[in-house]
Image (cartoon, rainbow, N blue to C red):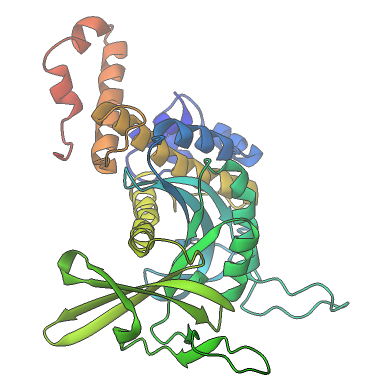
Length: 388
């Protein structure tokens, strides 16, 4: 029984002790293998290339997730922001890079890397004052640069949430050969590009008035999206990012009140509708975190060494990839560009039912062909599964 199959059939926490209860390997064997490291990025790459369609578009999505961890000797323990409680807590943080297929509306985790401890918003300068101070953003950029070798061909955009809308991150993404997509603050410092007459002498004027994000009258209207959201666009100068950017301005009016969201891309030629859809697809990585926590034991690791922690988290995320690939092949065929209806709860229940039926068949010396050909066999496999 492989590790991934064991993860699917385990009830309760996915840790060394529980894995040994559902397989013929002891707890010490799992500990030894995880300490050696697994290196699953190349396997994830091959799996993603197998399931994505040639006609669909993929984007890279980057985000961090927090995992609780007790004890004092675990590698990488530090204070990190926990989105669940909306505050900083002591634990571990993982930078995750995923590939999202826009046609399938499904995300596949590519790699997870632990954020090093002791890196704050501002590190003290080095002794020679020639090496720039290292921050967590530098770690995230390093992880992204490592993952670029495993990206599917054709990826142009790297999408991240508002935390990554910083000069260092955006510049680093562009230097890697990609375009950055993210979200700006509601009070972002933006300026219109000046296109009026120039003075006969002196430097040319490049910027016009400051952008008032509460008033989109000077933006170009694109279309009305679902739920009555109006989409506007403009090319402006970002003072904080120090570059021209394309805006996708989303305005919603309800009960006499207005609310807006400002998205951006460093690709000023991007279609604003495509920009909006790329950022909306970013939330697929949140579903990856949710399913990995609930069903594949993302936060259940008993290890303390960096190698074992890395193996556990990446194995948890790869188990999700395998489940999505298996479900996609049964629903719409391999390499389909259609959206995939995915329920990890149902998939894990079906895997456990199949494991128990195979175990009963082997222990009672029954004929497996007769059992699997019985018309009620499929009903037993779906026992307790959520109806799609």
